[in-house]
Length: 393
Image (cartoon, rainbow, N blue to C red; front, side, top):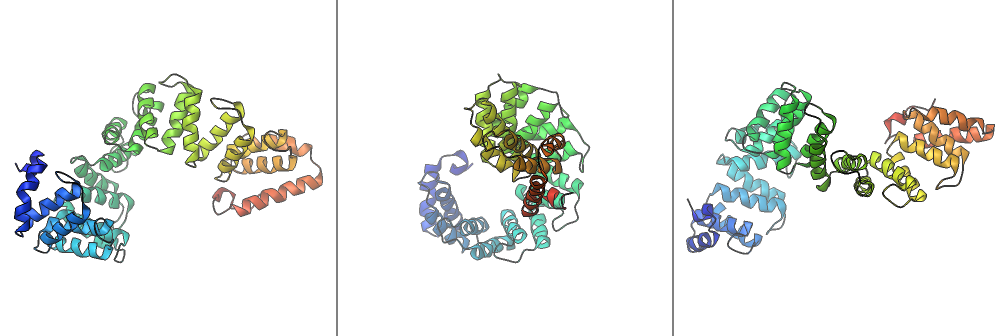
């Protein structure tokens, strides 16, 4: 076992430095790695680049790959994706797996070269056959999405399984999705939960959200609100808006945690600020009721308008009620009719009743103004809201 492998980085530096000064490529590479990672020395990407280059020019494939990474990210050198591809290519010529993967990623996304999913597939396949875990995960993604290959969920699952065997969290997450949905594998909630749990423990917020949701609703696993709250709280703390919204509902309803409206309002607002329409609507309703937050009807109108612009039917319905009753806005039956009409078009079940009631109190001119207002709003936002793309009936 080397000094580096034992974690004795100071000894590794002392051993490598004189050898690197004599031009030894392996020592130059390892000393560059120590500078790159800040182990045994202060982190210094420029010194890492100099040492990697010394080794790379002597044909050291790992140094060539790592120098390519520095050029790709612009660390210690001026960012230059073409130079990155050049160094990845040199290492790939020596069949160095990580470089094959990096070059495959560049071909996949068209970085410093024409986008070429087929070439990307071939490069990733060559790397995956060397047990490169990142390549295995990316091949799973290509087969799942049908990029550069015919879509094949079963093949995707096989590549994900190989990557997951090497503890690649993103592959564990996708295996959870495939088992939950029964795509390419037998549908199995318990197996899905196992993979989600493994990925969540490695910090994949989407996996924690999925696991929390499954426990919250008894979807393929035991209905367990405490477990749901635990995983949703983790994903919410990681900044995932959908998890923040779900955890706010958990706190509001006391599912697995003590009911706490102030805590619910905190998480609901965070989700709303991340532009999640249902959270914007629900936070507005909390503002209207003064639930866990100071009552503020004008702020509620602002949040409802943000949700409405995303096509949230309930937001339109609540705005209709506010205009009808003059809460947070000036009372305006025409505006109430417009919002109820749009809510109904977007599928709100109660909007039709409210629309009929308001219409009975309006004259012909007001009704014409409301019809024109609804059409104008629908036309203006048709590109963002396909449900309103067709002419209003």
